[in-house]
Image 1 (cartoon, rainbow, N blue to C red):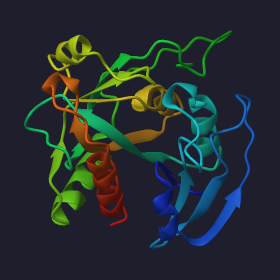
Image 2: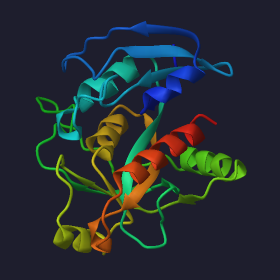
Image 3: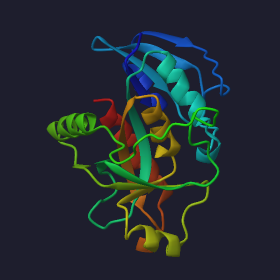
Image 4: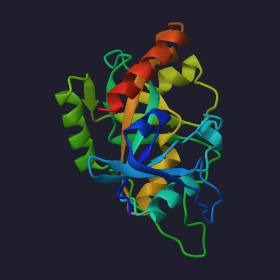
Length: 231
């Protein structure tokens, strides 16, 4: 049974040895895609593209419960999540890798728990990200020469729209990066006692910076950082 789950871009499939794909159903419906099972340097791994293999599922429509349940049923105990984010602070520049240790939830309509009743459980979120995995991934990223920051706060918004300038200026008082995918993924993983870490790619400054978004530059950074993730 696989122990490491990776949620993110399809470019990571190329790392898999002894690769096979399986379709999985769950009590919460179908996950975003079939699961890709294999090994990386002898470690059993499951890949799951959060937005589907053709990137057709927007963040607010992802079936997060099905995704996490499917990974857990394959024996996954640790999840590495790849996330594209905007920066809320000048010092965290596009192209950096950012590994958060806290989040603020500004989502509105998502299924946040497996425990809708009749049983009720309350899971601590004081330190939601896995400190052991954060440290290990940060250390390896820096060893490879990548500009990496470990520790900080991820603000998760509902999407699919981006923030207004007023929202962005408010959020930067409390958070360092902004995205649309960590929540409820991390909550659900914690409910199933799965360790979770986010390896976030900073693609641009959020709109507080009042700089126009360069789509070509965002895509270039995403491709560059996907290549970094392959290492």
